Length: 220
Ligand code: AP5
Ligand code: MG
Image 1: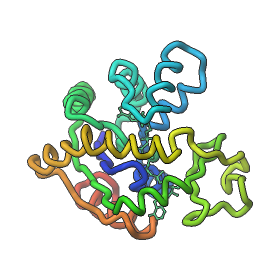
Image 2: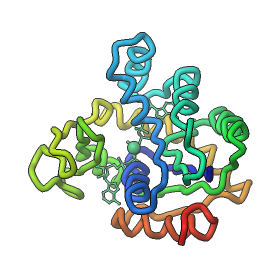
Image 3: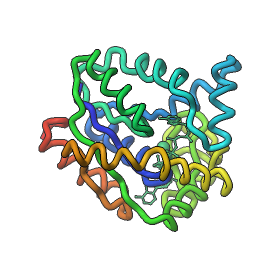
């Protein structure tokens, strides 16, 4: 397995670009947020706990998230795996190194998606997500063909519970405090590649595809 991390603030486009790479180039898209939203649908104690942290825009504890990540990686052996939203702390970066070691894999690249705060706020405020398949839309930037319905599966679109102004600001604060230190860690390891995320999603995905091809993560 080849491992690539997508780093970037909430709304920088991690999920959008990773799903384009999944559809076009067969990458395995592992979004920690999607994984948590998936389990949050159940009524287990773990689900209720995870939901509480997410609704406040805070990080879900590692002992809930990390086993879910490992489970999701079972059987992912040859693909290029894009870690979207994990790791988010220095501690999680150490945990990911351990997970990769157990799979005889190593981290190939870290892509940092950069965009201004004004754009982040515009993107998160207008985001809509398909309740059935999880596809991502934006009321202005990426509207569905039929209002409120998913182009791919016809499912209803909804606004994420944590896409309210107050929670968005909290998530941005958590990103600055807990996640930004990862930029130095991976830059020191010469793994970091910065990408301007204020472009069309397809254009960004193609730029990243070229970087990953040079690194042998996706075929030419
Ligand atoms: P998560 O789901 O990971 O949310 P996030 O990091 O806040 O990132 P987003 O999903 O909001 O943004 P994105 O970068 O994916 O942008 P997107 O492509 O959707 O995490 C949610 C919560 O789960 C966390 O707050 C935490 O509680 C918990 N959690 C997750 N991981 C955790 C971890 N490791 N540890 C602990 N807790 C964890 O794009 C946004 C919008 O912009 C969309 O509408 C899209 O259509 C539009 N858009 C995207 N790209 C473009 C573009 N190029 N041009 C125009 N519009 C665009
Ligand atoms: Mg996302």
